[in-house]
Length: 112
Length: 112
Image (cartoon, rainbow over all chains, first blue to last red; front, side, top):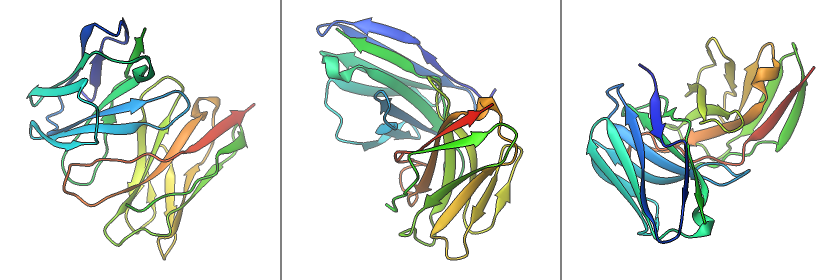
């Protein structure tokens, strides 16, 4: 299994809603990542988890709250988002050390 | 982090080789060069990576100059399905997993 699975594929939410994005991998990877991608722009790193511990937070607003409950799962909890947070949210995983990142297909978020 | 410079866009005829250049003149000795591509509305896909030597796999070849200040990704027989944005990324030192910082990339259009 060389897949990173993200759910839901599409999400529409209001600014007062609370929702979560989910990411799952069963490759035994111990590093997992959240990236945000606006239209026609490159992906931007948000968070890195290494061995289930948050190792990098790229100054992301607190309305985005990551969680890594175990080595296979990564969540991104969303609360009080703004319309400008509408984007494609990409999850990735990797082994530590040189090597490739495996990306999921992304969750497309629209904030109304 | 070493930064990369890529042409914004390129065209290639179907069946011909696509040569995508990347400049990374500030690369340091232990930084790898990675190539990823992103087909429209999909997650980025790993293509190849290298440190000093040229590399080849089933998808592409990576040619790195001797001074390591630039590299070229070669798709030997481009098909319409290779139309995508290609990202050249220099990977920073370990310390936080395999985090990748994406630049602007090259939009490759393969034409019949």
